Length: 421
Image (cartoon, rainbow, N blue to C red; front, top):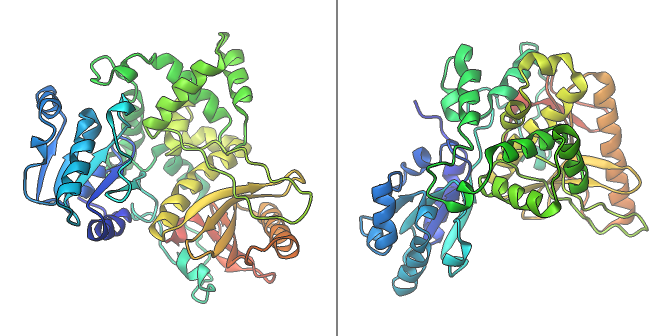
């Protein structure tokens, strides 16, 4: 069974406007399955023989009917250079599709950025809309257009227990397709196999100690959805594991985690505020999929529901995953805002045409919703008074549970299981 992915429209567009498309993302998020919909010939670098042959004859691997799909291209990095040279010689739209679940071990082997020839796309795990677990009655693009179709909907059949399960299961297609009673075990097996590098052809990853990668992930998870400084995370690693770690080692290992598309920090949004207010530029710490954070700490759905404060932070990371995919499908991006006056916004969705919307992410309940709405209104006022940035297209409190409605102050409230692009 195949679930339609939002990135399909972007791939189709890029094939019409670029010589090649690179679809990168974490292992088992569905890259190859989705890209197979667009290919007319393909090769998978998934055996030692195919990898050896590709390294010996990277140009030869390009032969085949176009679009030609080359799966896990980074295992023979010269393929990138050969694609670039082929497009220089005879440029046509939609000749190649490359997929990759990590960056090349030796980036010096890639002699060209690919700009103007190879269009990059990042594919993330499945959102609730893609997995069929969101009703899709609240549309982001409708909110950008004024929210005229925004529903009033009680949504009483979706509980915190449901949210906790979805967070721990994650958006991995193999887990989404599985029966609920074994889905969490499948995600656990996925996590346990993330750092098995003994036979990895990539020497850079073979040299990484799995226990150190897991150690860093645990500290990252303990600081999830926060602006924790590198020094704070290193201090947590030292205290929790009773071992030393210097900044160079930490940065080397976190670079590997980013190259494997496991962690994905959120950059700060910096509008031009005409005041002495300092906009903080520290990124918030996020995972590509919150289930990895859960597995790194051995957290179960029951653990989340028993600790609502932690649940809120993990839910924020979970919501950011979906918001990023939805925003990307609209040609937009997601960032966060915080200034030295303590004003913050969990997610600012920014479109290419300059429109933006502010989102506060809360578990739900009158008090948390009221706090989120108040923060959004303060941001709106500060932007109006002290910035040249346009007024927000919408303000939204995105909740884990509860209904969808529009408040008297104009702030929208909606649960994540009603959201779509």
